[in-house]
Structures are given as C-alpha cells and as structure tokens.
Length: 184
Image (cartoon, rainbow, N blue to C red):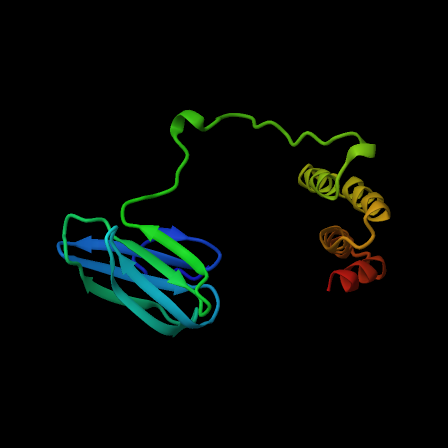
C-alpha cells in the first residue's frame, strides 16, 4: 500500500491513503492512491457546504498534496475522493477514527472458527478449515481438505487457488497446474 510522503495515515482503504493535518486555518491534505484513477474528484466540505473541489488524474507513483485554507478554524472538515463516475472511494472526517473500544477487545487465546459438520459446510467453511490446517502446519491435511471441497465446489476460484498454491509449495507442480489454470 503506497504511503510515501503523506506524513501519516488518517484513513486507509483499498483505494487510497489520506492524511489530514491541521495547522491553524490551514488543512494539509496528502493523498496516495493504490491504483490509477482518471478523472477523480477530491472534495473538502463542512456540514453546511463544499468549499474545495478539484478533478484530476491520480496514480500510485505520486503523492497529491495540498494546503487548503479553511473558512473556520474550529470546524472539522470532511475529505472525500470519488472516481470519475461519482462513486465514493474514500471519506475521512477530520479527527474521526474507527476503532474498537478497549472494553470490546478480547485478549489471550482467541476462539477458533467453528466449522460445521461436513454435510452442512459451505464453500467458505471448507476454505477456512483448510487455512486453519495450513496455519497449524498440517499441510497435507489442508491439501486433502481443499481437494474434498473441490469435489463439492469444482468451479470455486478460491478453492482452486488455495489447492494450486499449496500443491506448488509442496513441489507437486503437475498436480498444481490444473488448479492454477482454473483460478487464472
């Protein structure tokens, strides 16, 4: 994820990383996108109205930076980035952050994913079971799990990818090839 020269992270998602930093009546905005965006719209607004908007092309190779004089030094402003069709890709309100309260954080050993019995498993249940087996070091067991799941879900992209990746890492290249080709 590109995060160069932003000065920090106020919000990050699959589209971009933005950092908002206030200094008096100037809001410094630094943005680094994760993919090329042609005709993106960047906007800064308050609850009452938008006061800065620009349309431009963005790419991960360069950071967009702008010092914007804000009308009211006491107001918290909202930064938004939209694609060329107006779809909201990133939104950050100054000083507002998503976080889990300490009272909701469970420390110590975590509960494992409860995998249903075989007859009731979904495609994702099989995938989670295989991942757990891999993380536990039971690579051959994980491979058997992926293969059993592929009998039930033969067109599954995720299961084909997992089985092919694991077979390749076990140097079973001939067995991996059909799964990887199917995933590709």
